[in-house]
Image (cartoon, protein in one colour):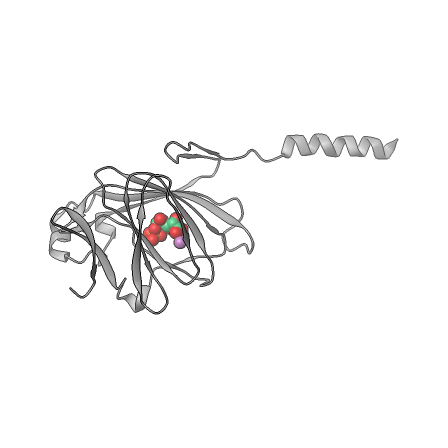
Length: 202
Ligand code: PA5
Ligand code: NI
């Protein structure tokens, strides 16, 4: 009898406390969840990221290049957990180079990640531990598996914002010191109206 009551109290408590799921608008990737985090990167904060520093210094430092919204259902650093995020990069260029994310490796090097393109078009630039650099085309529906150790950066090569959803381990961490501060070995630039991958030394 007593145990039955206890069990009922427990199940009522479970119903009251059961977590509300997050919501994603799959048409545009927008996330709705309590405690959603957001960060914003303006041109002025992206020091040393773009190749043409003169072109960069002529642009309005208040221009928003990208925003990230993300959900941390467990504390950052939790082993075995996952985070979910959305990145929106505006269209635009600094000289010939398209607007893009800073790019990073994961602090815990063997942590992989998924990127999925929701809207817009771009290139996912990837660089492995040996410095080999390549890209994958990003179009609505493209799903990208980013292996551990591989540095990754999203480049918006289109005329509209690119929106990319991501899922990564909660203990991955972000390491922005790519190749000892020299950055990626190749960049996406506009040549004769089209995006091409060129060596970062060119
Ligand atoms: O975790 C990820 O890989 C993404 O959410 C990125 O952090 C996001 O796209 C912004 O890029 P970056 O962290 O390189 O500035
Ligand atoms: Ni990442």
